[in-house]
Length: 96
Image (cartoon, rainbow, N blue to C red; front, top):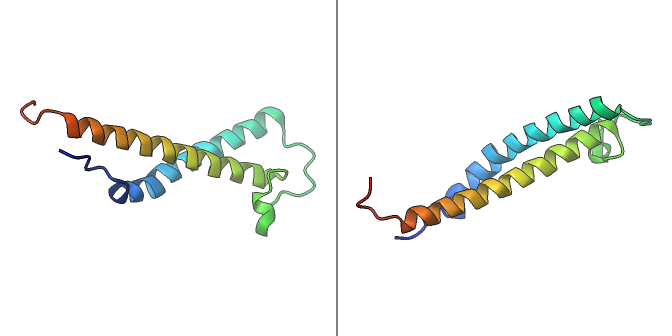
């Protein structure tokens, strides 16, 4: 048998479900860091335009953490799904 969990079949799960789950974890991490170390002396909260993704602003730090965690979790889920597909392809069909 061959691996049925190809990138074409899993891209929707990776981009929507995994990425948004990772982004949720990143927002919690960003908020926890801000609670633990304080907001710092930010001149701007960073909510408009490109400033929203500048890690030296309050909002930008959280946004960057959300994107980083989302990308990392999508990669982890993609690797896990690929490995699962390989294992399923090697498994004997007369089993369970």
